[in-house]
Length: 276
Length: 320
Image (cartoon, rainbow over all chains, first blue to last red; front, top):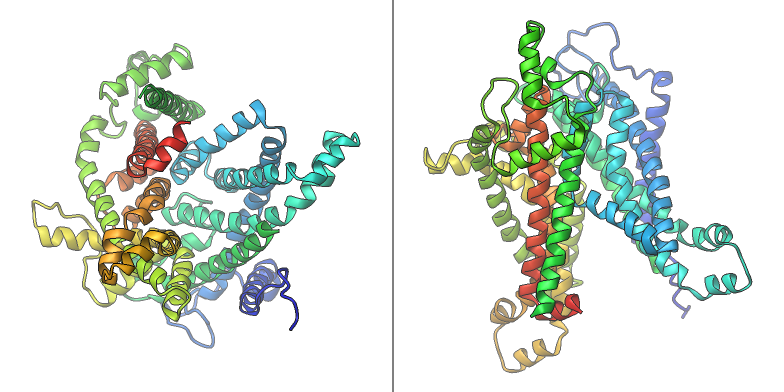
């Protein structure tokens, strides 16, 4: 019998990871190449097939003025994913950096960063995002900033805990004893070791941001119309539940599958990364 | 005992400082607005005299900290100011909106426990069986459905297709109790299904641990039936993490309540907040945000205290 290899991912988990990866790859390809593939939010010509259910011509059906819902969902994913990507990058880099500082330097730096993070985590963040978007102008930049504030503290907290763990390891002490500079220790000893955790946190942060932006745009406080996002598509289906339930079902399904994929990937990778 | 009072004193100090910081941030954010609240509220037809009086009322001439302090003392005495839109006192409006939100949150908690206690218990008792994995998988799936998606689907299925529940709106319990329950059932279920998965996972983990404890073996050896074992001896020690979680989860719950009230047109604080956001009624938005943040911080402290009471082990661990 072969010895058990703890680094191997169980086959069922692997299948899930691959499925999640395929789904994410597909939506990203569609979002990026939407203009080339001919999925435009507004075809310019109005079809007579208003509020029609799914068909070969329109996979997700059509909306109240005959626009193809599939094309609109693809188009909406461009903004939703763009905001999510930027916010995730921001949250991971800033949150990761703060967590690293707090975990490595400890003392008052840690007190200050952890205090701020705890306050931020202990507040109903969506309401603050709503307040921010109301006060600042309602545009792509400000929405991105507002939702970034949600993912940053979560990342910071976990990265701090990981840094604390790694910093107490023998090899860090050895590096210190041979006179390595702090910068070198942070970037050559600690960072590579917490990187797997940080990368798996990206997926989880991505999920948080998708939900936050979706909620804002569902309320009507994300990037203003005529721009569309997944949340605003779902919101525009609200009044037509009777005649056109597909306007609600398909955007909901797409959001669900995307969140399921990032959450799944994030959880499996995080479990694996924090075990080592 | 003096240890305990220092502990409480420290917590209270921490609590107060957070509330001050948080309310100050809300207050300060509002100052970032272009123009001042008076020009915003009076509209284009305002005379210079009116504007001057209004500015005088709000003490716009003095510095930020002075105004913050005035605002805070006003709030502490229950004077939240007036809505720009119609001049009605914010406290009066809040008193009207609070019951719907409170009922909604209460029902949500009840439903969450009704869903998660049986499921968490079964999953733990039949751990690693198909029942357990079905519950875990479903919970994980539920976590990927945000409130605004789940709420929309609920309306579509139960209100539009089956017509079991009204499309939205809120009925007070004194008007018609059955209609009251009907009006809040779907919103509460939406919120409960959002938090239940986390509760299920935690309860399962705690319970699995307790099932392996010596006292479980002892109780079993005495021949107590399973049902009694679970309800009399396992549920209490397994619920500590759950209580803490309830506090942490409150932030999520408050976020989701705002969205859910919006979806189901429940006339509560959340939908009032969104209305005010759209009407650019900044003072109301500021007040509600500050109130929610404060309520939230206080709630968390209370949960900490309950935890202290429930589990004697934590008492000594936290104090020393």
